[in-house]
Image 1 (cartoon, rainbow, N blue to C red):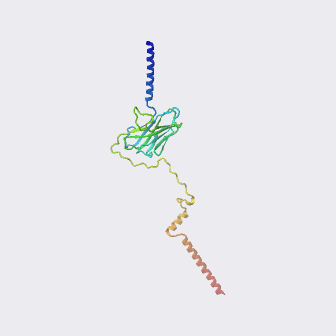
Image 2: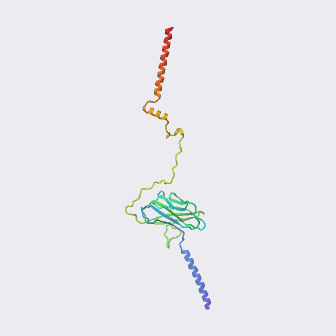
Image 3: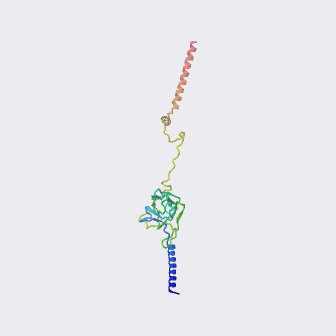
Amino acid sequence: MSTSVRVRAVRRCAGVVAAAIAATLVLATPASAHVEVGSEGARALAENVTLNFDAATESDAAGITKLEVFLPKGIAPADVTYGKGPAGWKLAPTDKGFTVSGPPVAVGTDVAVSVVVRQLPDAKSLVFKTLQTYDDGRVDRWIELEESSGGGHGHSAPVLKLQAAAPGAEPVAPTPSASPTSATPLPSAPPATETADAKPTASDRATATAEEDGSSPALPIGIAVAVLALAGGGLWWFLKSRRTGTA
């Protein structure tokens, strides 16, 4: 085999090896998209803690519209209040956590959301499974609990590491189950004839006062009628006697 042929063969082999190495590196690189949760200096049993959720986009055709977070044991939906997020986004509690949602952000834009937790539980770490929704209906499910090697993989749930509780820290009283943002419907006004809280008129007050002290108007009226009846009877007897005497 000539020298030139051997050189061409070596070059071809080198090209094949380089392509294989490049493909291997691409496949081995973890997905850049993720949802992370963080809180500077977070400690177990700490109160009024701000949690920051950062959701990287994984779509080049749709914008993120919602993050649905499933809370770990020890944090109730009523314990979470809204911090900040994209313009127009709002927080709503769910049975197992909360959602923060609103108008879709621009395509290719990541989302940063913060919430305030009344108190963190006494734990070493907290897992916040999260669903990330786009305006085309796509949902990325960041819910896997396995810790992967090499920096994680595309479906790991966000995990918050906690420092040990501060000396003397204790659990606070449970938050009432009712959401502080929920509106209580006002009762409809009862009909006028059945209104129990209607202000009494002057005649009503007078009647009530009379009934309370035993001087109901019915008693003097009855006495007056009796007096008039007796007076009428006496006048009739007087006139009759005069006619009889005259005759």
